Image (cartoon, rainbow, N blue to C red; front, side, top):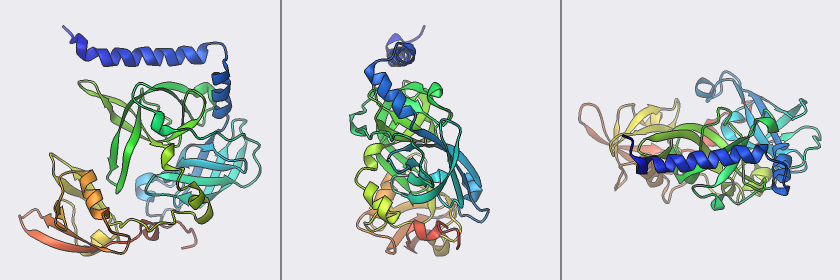
Length: 337
């Protein structure tokens, strides 16, 4: 017989999602009118990346997703992996027009990317909301490149830390369910139609109700607000960049292993190898991916030396000094290089 108490969270999720569906089908209210207007700001984002790009092997040379217009002059916010290292970018509007766009910025810390339409697009920008208000049980709406009719009512099922092996960490990512297959660069909107997140990933563990529940991870819009002017003006944050090593770690039972090492990266040059167990960063022991990242970044900037204590496959413990770098200098963001 099923555990009724354990099924209660799933029941609440079903009720909330049913309400979201009914909301979209009911007669328009003022809030719905705002949401529909915001969904018109969601556009398609297509990019072409050269075959010699650093990320071509993992992310491909043609990339497709969504973005959201956030300014009157055609500035589009998207997820950065769609446009980094791109030599050609186009945005597709709801009316089917395809408009060339130029690369504006990529921010590795948040994961956001910015592009700008090359010609006027006459699309009202979406207003930015407060992602900090989006707690568990909040009803939200996903909009993607396929237009307002494809909008999906979903539920915020968790707010928690997210660590990605590409040296990426969010303190309070937004997790939603059920999953949307068109998540890349999709806009996440609150009940008033304000943009509160940008789609990044499909995850198998958006929430845990006795077992993992699949969904999507969204980057909170509050990560953008302090740096937006910097990104537009300079294409990057103005503060010193974090040290980047080029290690892709994997966390297994409170142990941090090196899963792979980026080609030509600081870690590769220092002799770090797949299968190494990272015991400590300097004098700081590490037992999680996020703990490892924080130890590497603490009181350091790009260019500083980071000493990793590693245990290799034959049981040798080594102290390996790694001369870090700015990840932007490793990526080929300038297509002329």
